[in-house]
Image (cartoon, rainbow, N blue to C red; front, side):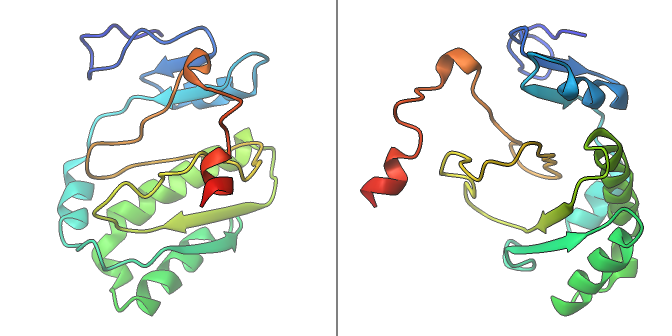
Length: 165
């Protein structure tokens, strides 16, 4: 389902972007010519209440390997390591588990890694040049995640900032 500029501030997506109100839209990222699938979903008040307990410094930038079956244990361990009680984030953990289950299906069981952090700044200043074949992003609080349409990408400049610094 395509969105108009009046819905959640989204512009009309190009054909290579799929946007929908159902989790099934995420599977479309595997279709030829699709570069991005966006699940436009409502904010859950229970998750917002849990997230509001976090400060920008509560979760350090941590990346972990995980699996569909160990994800909740892995996230709980990460929270405990950061001095947080996993039980205080039951709804968040349940939502993240739902997302990892969907992602695991979409990615056909490839190796999974997750990154969980709180930040007060734009944490993704550089272009993604890590050459991941597939990535799932979820912003739980704040302005969200921005992306460029394919036509907006200056492919000659990709990585230039990395080389200049």
